[in-house]
Image (cartoon, rainbow, N blue to C red; front, side, top):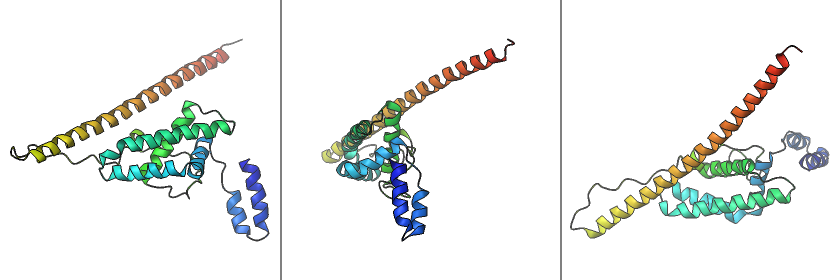
Length: 206
């Protein structure tokens, strides 16, 4: 559909704007996962806005935005799976992981640049564990609050708990990513062994 529509629109543009027609024909067909993220911009704008807003708050150290950010990311992943399935594709784990990584990259970058919103042709790599790298940790609380200042002590305890929760969340994401990479590596190793066995068999004299 993309190729056919690109050709049709370029033909229309040629009559009045050959440069635009040429630029359009040079646009590549997006991957399924990149296309799904593009569709989220057009079909799930509220969720996308929530993702960008909560990511911006996290970059400013506002840890209370963590839960809302996770909820926005989860909602977008679910919506992307639905969009992919409705288009006749398979929303498998590998494709949805690419969707999540691209969303995390957009969230960490704070926008779509250098692409226009909703026009990605390729997937983007998440900058670290679920896009959390680059989001600053909260400033450490003072080692000791004055004993007579109960409000300061309570604030310190809250900051320490928020910091523990933050680190635990990033650690969990890191472990999940590590396990996914290990599974992918194991599958590749098995594929290599199978290919080497096939190559050895072909080398044997008949």
